[in-house]
Amino acid sequence: MHHALNQGRWLGQVVAGKTAQWVARLTGLALSFGLALLAAGLVSPLQAADKDLEPNFPRTMSWSAYNLGTTGYNQAVAIGKALKDNYDVNLRVLPGKNDVSRLLPLQRGRVQFSANGVATYFAQEGVFQFAGKTWGPMPLRIVMASHGESNQALGVAADLGVKTYADLRGKRVPYVRGAPALNVTTEAFLACGGLTWDDVERVDFPGYSAMWTGVVNGQVDAAYATTVSGPTRKLEASPRGIFWPPAPHDDDGCWQRMATVVPFMQKHVATRGAAISVENPHEGATYPYPLLITLADQDEQLVFDLARAIDVHYEDYKNADPGSIGWAMDRQNFQWVVPFHDGAVHYFRSIGVWNDEAQAHNQRLIERQNVLAQAWRAHRAEDPDDFSAAWMVRRTEALTSAGFDPIWR
Image 1: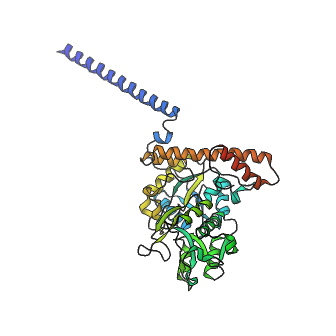
Image 2: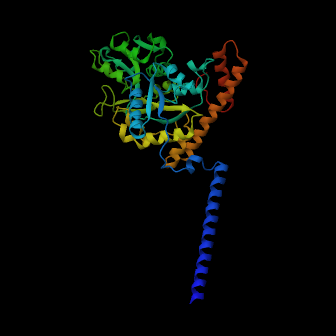
């Protein structure tokens, strides 16, 4: 009996020992396999990490945005409240009156992110204000963007009786200094009506809010905005009132002319905005706004965590501003004209919304940025007297040679 017990104990120890060896061996193999995948670039450190780990946000985060009262600023503040409530993050939102004043803090490292507009695309391309020596093409990346129920359009003072963009001929139209995003989109909507800047009276303003105050005060007759932007409500409530001319979706001429000015407009029927509702929709154009952007070298884990927080806590801020519903994950457009940051891509992939087609598109956009960066380095080294004009020529040649459409020449 004693011998049998000892033999049983010995057999148990052997089995236990063998089991432990196999477990250790399997664990080692799994670890080796995971490390091999990481080394091969097939799995990123973020994908290998536990997605349920609490984000390690900095105590203070800084973003730039449009002026106080605009939908871009309001949405940034609303997301900031969600970050404060859930992660004790203090979000500092730095308002900027034009494209340069929003992107300069990002370029200089004063903010980590910017709730920006379509100037993101112009800065990526190194055109307009960004063709000068202090700028050049920026390696910008999207974290997430808002695709709401609003449109982008020219809001016109209703007391003029304007019904179409063609009716703006001879009217006073604002031009904002240092804001190519506002000016080129204004030009695109004028083009919808077959007009150019030569067909209207151009009036210069220092910023977005000043431009809209000018419409309310009778200094100009129309101004560009997203239809849910705060200043548009002031015009709606004023004696002048507001009207948004349509960009009819069946008007091929309108859309072809717009496309020659900007490549990023999409057809959309808006149901939200000043004097716009489900009962009174607006047939026109849009693009994502605001775009939460950063530089390509921003910390990957921070971007991953921020994209996750914006997604997970959507219910916390979606009703804070009429445009806030646009941050929903099922509204994201993964194939726009500016690439997404690797950290955001890893989050999207982890929840199963990123596919091979989106990846191929994103990589192509990054390749375009690389072509621009290489051309810019060569141009800075040459430093011609007619710097900006010569850059546009070099830019066109570089993009064309690489098989890309330069858009602006």
